[in-house]
Image 1 (spheres, rainbow, N blue to C red):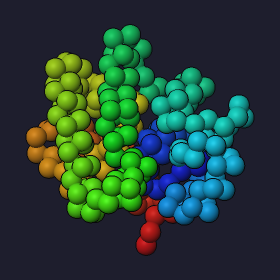
Image 2: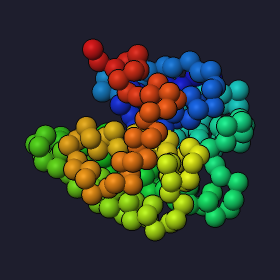
Image 3: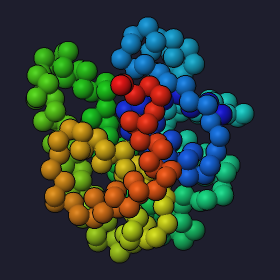
Image 4: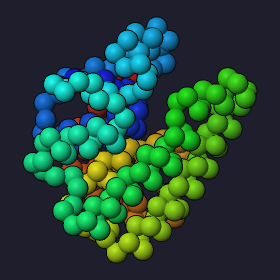
Length: 212
């Protein structure tokens, strides 16, 4: 398999974690998203122009949640979804809250629009990001606490796709200077996850296309 990604992409980060947890060999193909020529070339492979994209024997897969589902179905060893229906729904709810309600408001296309079309300063764009991450984390913290399922990880004592989504979003929150003191459950789970080798190896700083 070949994974097209970008070191700082939250969505690609999710998939790197899952591949590591499942111990699946993959060739990493970095995409320079800020280089218009490189992005144009990438669109020949993935017309959506988004990362991640995973080339498999079944064809090219796009969208991180769909890729995580594919990996779970085709490589069920080291499962990333609970077996109980209620816990499975809870894990998917957390993953989708992050992937659909928090992350898109901070995505590269949105930030470029705010900078170049709305002429917002770097400081105001960062404030925008913090506003929507903290809004989402407030909702997520409450959901985790009230669910009764949260433990060392989002769901009890086993890593799931929810953790694969949570850790990259916490990384972004810290990078953007969010105050995380109001989210003890989120930060506890993040600390537990990032201590695991599969998560550590997927960290943006450890990717081949990371600067410096």
